[in-house]
Length: 160
Image (cartoon, rainbow, N blue to C red; front, side, top):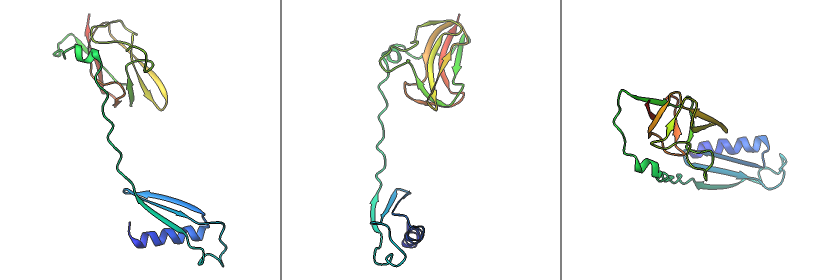
């Protein structure tokens, strides 16, 4: 942000009569605040107070540790008997109905058609993802709390 852009913002704030204004772009935050309601006659003597503070980059969030099921079950090689369950929507993957509940399924769990495998949360709606085949869960391909895309593989199931 250069001085000309700041001056244009200041002129706009004074012109519109704002008492407070905050703007953030490219890691720079500009906050303007005027004391009281200025009239056109008093505006030049009551200039805005400008505070400038760089915005720190957000700290990376560490990935949650893998669950015991993910550690205990080594990844199995794809075979002709496996079926991949894919995410039908974009959202956040959850392995259980609540943080304190056990996962819906783990590697080695037997499932039938309609068994709930996980939840994909999208826009505060919890969507249960069900198995469309009967068999045994071979592998969970996504970590709990991870964002998922449409069509992203979630589970591999050995069809029985």
